[in-house]
Length: 304
Ligand SMILES: NC(=O)c1ccc[n+]([C@@H]2O[C@H](COP(=O)([O-])OP(=O)(O)OC[C@H]3O[C@@H](n4cnc5c(N)ncnc54)[C@H](OP(=O)(O)O)[C@@H]3O)[C@@H](O)[C@H]2O)c1
Image (cartoon, rainbow, N blue to C red; front, side):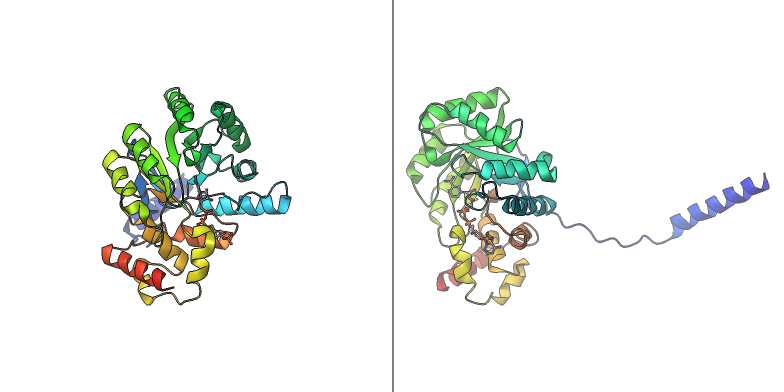
């Protein structure tokens, strides 16, 4: 009995101490920047991951593991959207391998495409899904508008049947913007994917304002012009004012320029390197440039 009382007193004292003790200061986890998908309000992190060329590594086990490492670091840094296409060689299978190896499939927003001039879009999407090893895609886009007349009705029917969640269309490098605009005006698409960066700003004129007006999410491809832009920028020092928006590299500054446009939902840089995916994900944290800093970024990039 004595022992029990003493134990209870000790516990009570410990509880009092716990109440009176000043709280331990804990570092707040940084919040990742997200944008809502206009058609549903679902939040998406502003930086995603592309897979064109970079994940087309075939059966090479070392290269496949390197891609899986990129995917793991991407998701661990808070990333969600991974973008691929049947056009990207073995990339879909490599993504499937990475998702299985890392066990991170449930945290990924799967974005793929239909890309065939035939009417066999549904079969192609099924094959892509098997390559990814997912039960359904979050987003399927008509790649480069190829045969959109056949594919868009298929995608809307699949969405209505719960076989995919969102429908989109893509283009790049300023191609067929008039057709993209027309489809944005006439079809209930959820996403449009276009090229946009401090050099390629054509989308600013019509596509981005129209996306806001119509409530369409925007994915930005080729943020680094397939790497040429960051390679050119690397020849000059990073301006000291990059620190005002928490950037320590040109890649981050370019990504922050892109995702600070109010119409942009996310940018999808591709990379083979863990160091680069970490750097790119840094752009999804901290402060974003305002209008005047965006102009300074354009000026600095144009002088490079
Ligand atoms: N029509 C369409 O639907 C369409 C067209 C084009 C692209 N896309 C999509 O958009 C994605 C992105 O476009 P993209 O792959 O053409 O080009 P990108 O993302 O502009 O550039 C990729 C290149 O940038 C380099 N890079 C990445 N992060 C870097 C960093 N932090 N520092 C320095 N270099 C870095 C990579 O090299 P390292 O491997 O050395 O990092 C890679 O060679 C594609 O992968 C694809 O998913 C879609």
